[in-house]
Structures are given as C-alpha cells and as structure tokens.
Amino acid sequence: MKALVWHGKEDIRYDTVSDPAIEHPRDAIIKVTSCAICGSDLHLFHNLVPAMLPGDIMGHETMGEVVEVGSDAKGSLKKGDRVVIPFTIQCGECDQCRRGNFSVCERTNRKKELGDKAFGHATAGLFGYTHLTGGYPGGQAEYLRVPFADTTHIKVPGGIDDEKLLFLSDILPTGWQAAVQADIQPGDTVAVWGCGPVGQMTIRSAILLGAEQVVAIDHLPERLSMAAAAGAITINFAEESVVDRLNELTGGKGPHKCIDAVGTESHVNFGQPDTVLDRAKQMLMMENDRPHVLREMIFVCRPGGVISIIGVYLGLVDKIPMGQAMNKGLTFRMAQAHVPRWTGDLLRRIEEGQIDPSFVITHKVDLSQGPEMYATFRDKADGCIKVMLQP
Amino acid sequence: MTLTNITGIARSEGDPRVERKGPSSMRGADRLARALGWFSIGLGLTELVAPGRLARALGLEGKEGLIRAYGARELASAMPTLSIDKPIGLAARIGGDALDLATLATALGRDNPKRRNAAIATALVVGITLLDVAAYTGVKAAHRRSPGDDRDYSDRSGFPRGAQASRGLAREDFNIPPDYRAEGTVADALPVLAL
Image 1 (cartoon, rainbow over the protein chains, first blue to last red):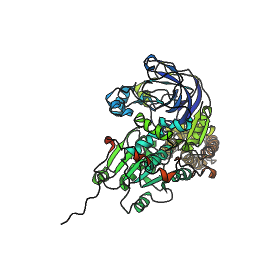
Image 2: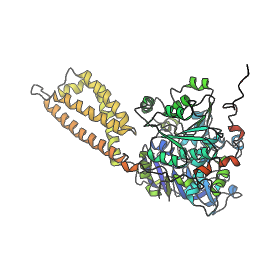
Image 3: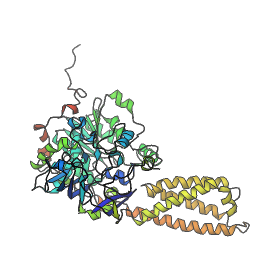
Image 4: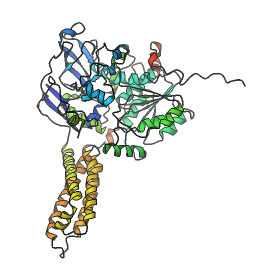
C-alpha cells in the first residue's frame, strides 16, 4: 500500500509499504477514505520528539471503511462499517477508560516500559505518534490496522460527507475538551491563543458553550479572519500587545479563562525576547518546548481563573512563573483529548447542524501530495490552515 | 544520539515495512543546507582541534587563537543550519565566509611561502560561499509566505445556523462534567459585607 512515512527531520515520503494484517483478535483493518495532517504532526516533522524511527507511518486523523475484523471485535464491528478512528487507542476496560480518561488508557501502549520511563506512567497508545505512545503505524495510508478496534472506533452514518466527520478523530473533540476543561460559563471572557485547526475548533466550542466574549490570538491574517467568522474578537500579536488588549476588553481584570491551543512551538518573535531565548535553548537541547503562551496566559489571566492547556507540550519548559500562578490562585487543566468521551455528543451536533467542522479545510488533495503538503502546512503558505488527504 | 539509539526501541514485527521509497518533502535547497551544516561541524571541529596545523599549512602562524575562534563560530552556525531555522544558520555561514576570506587575504602576500596553499583555500572558500548563498536563497524562496497567502476566510463560520444564533446552543443540553468543574475559583460575587 501507499503511505506517508517519516524518514527524519523534515523528511516525509510517499512510500510503498507492506499491507497491515490482523495481529490480534480485537484488531480490525480499515480502508482509509480520508485522513488529515494535524498541527501536532509538525512536531514530528521537526523531529522534536526523539522517539521516531525511520520507516514509521504518520497520521492520527483517519476515517474509512472496515474491510477485515478480528474474531473478538466482531460483536461491535463488521465489514463495510463506516468508522472514524480516534487518535487515542483505548481498551475500554481499565480504570482510566472507565473514568472516561481515554487518553491515559493503562493498557494500549505496547511500549509501556518506555512510556513509564518518559512520563512516570505510560499513557495511551496513539496512532502514528512516536514509540513513547506505542509506535503504532499511523493512518496517512491506504489501510490502517486498528488495535482494540472494538472500542477504538466511532461508527458514523452514511449520507454525511467525510469532510464533516473526519475531525471527530481529533481536532473537534480536542477543541471541545479545551473549552470544557476551562469550565466556560455564560458571562466569561475566554481567550484562545493560537488559531490553527485546534484553536478554530476551540473558538467554536467556546461559543457553543455560551462564552460572552471569545478572543482569538494569532498573527496570521487568514487564521484571524477564520476566527472572526465565528464571532471571535481578534488580536494580532504582531501588531498590538496581547496583555494590553485583553485587559482593555475585560475592564482591566483579565480573561476568566485562558486556553493554550499553541503548545510546544510558540511563534518566535523578536518583539518577545523570551521566544528567541526559548528557540536558542531548544536548538541546543537545553529545553524541549517554547512556552511563551503559558507565560503570557499566567500573567494576564484573571485571579481565580482557569488555564486550559490543549496544545501539545513534549518535555521540559523553563521560566514558568509559578509565583504568579500560585498567588493568583489559578486552576490548571490539561490533557490529550479523551476523544470517545465527547464524540457521541459532537456527532449529534454535526447531524443537527449546530456545527460543520469542514469549514477548516483549506486544502483537499491526493495522499500522494502529502510530502509537499507537510511543507506547505509548516510554512503556512498558500493560505493553508488544514490539509485533508484522500488515498 | 537520539532516544531511539539509547533505548534500542524497534518497530514491532507485524508493522508495515517500507518496500520502496517515494518522493520526499525535502527540497534540493533543504538537502544542500543540511550538507553545509554537516560540513560546518567537520570544519569547526578541525579548526578547534588542530589550529596549529592549519596555521602552518596556510602561513598564518600566530593566528591559532583566531582559527580556534572560527572553529567555534562554525559549530555555532551549524546548529541553526541543521535545524528548521536554516536561513539563520546559512546567513551566519555567509557572514563567516566573509571573515574567512578576509583572513585568508592576509596570507596571499608574496612574503608568505605558503601562499599557494592560501590561494587554494581561498578558492575553496569562494566556492563554499557560492553554495551558502545558493542554499540561503533557495531555502528562503522555497519556504516563504507570499503576499497572496493572506487569504480571507471570513465566510467560514462553521456554524450552519449563523454565529450569533449558535452562541450558547450547547448549554441547552450539555452540562460541564463534574470532573471538569472549576467551581469556586471564579465564584459568584456575594453582596458587599455590611460593616
């Protein structure tokens, strides 16, 4: 089959690879109909997580049709079923899964020992996202083996385009969880840093959850225009002070809720010297992440407010002002999205026409164009916000 | 040294294996930049470890400290050249090339018995400078945003019922789960205390 394969830093190739096969009775094989490049794939593209092997298949936003089912998954799946595959692999039986904390499933990381060493306790297996999370082949391919398939799928009805359903795999529930874990209440001012695909979904989720003001922060005009389309107030951090503007919008008190939809690769801006220092330290392997957004959120958040982190962080961060956070009494919530916890509800909202996630797709191309699309997406060229790929 | 080397992790047996490699996301300028980055490391280490031999070969005796400093400079410019911030590294390399050429120019005089070696080194540095400039312009051109990239997506609300009508829609049938409530952190204001 054909697949997008990681070969090293900035080196993704459209390779021919061997076909996947059922390895366990709970497995299923799907024929991929659509997949996408996620912003977090760029962290692997940039080789910021030193736990990829050349030959690893990329991708964790995938949907398709079931073509083969293992004997133990036949109760819940059959050939021909149309499914979206969550980026998290869950057993559905462990203590964490039963609590709805699917992204920290205790059983699905097949490289648990490595995960334990890296994180203290291993987290769930993920598709196409390093050997720290199981080293499972990803879904930017013609076929995907889905482990624990009886509990790792979202059945979706026919008659709705892939474009509207694909993002149930990751960015829609991820944006939704970012808003939910901020505990948004009517009357809240919610500031969202980063207007990439997850930020866009977060903005829409915050609006659906009734935030009075949603403030979107980025520097790319096309992303800000998409945020404004949903009713967000926009701040271009290259043109004005984020802190001053947020204080102005909140009568000097700061936002009630601050959401980080940027994560490890904060934009490097010479007007913000800490971003330059972070980049230099990252290059020298003295720091894993560039946490400018975290610093800014802690500084500007209203005392007693909530910091919600959904942008992916990878390791060690420096100069986090814990004194400000502690003295202001901030609440921190963060996680990889517990995808299946939200997808039933979100599928209904798509079916009822409350939200149409396809708005975010700016590029829809053949899988064979994947390698150049990685570069286009990374360079934010050609107005690219979200790439959908079809084998 | 990557984590994969340290831990010895390997792909699981049943996982798909590459049978034939296809086109890459890397462009020619990216590959050239990478080669120049590794060249920088090689030259930088040589200048740091053996400045005396280089000085004698070029007739630059007495400038061993300067050569060692240039070695450190080469290593410093290799870092960004091998990173995703290639233009910064390549620009630093071009600046370094100018310093190298200026230094070599002092060794081209008739009084230097090693001026032939210095002339060969100068020609090599000129060649490398051209490669650096080609890589820099190539990388900048390949990865730049052009003015037309500022698209207007103001018609993409994602709300089929309209942005205003969608505000608070989910509150009608969705309650924040108890484990995500932050009650008490931004509590409702109580009446002003009567003193």
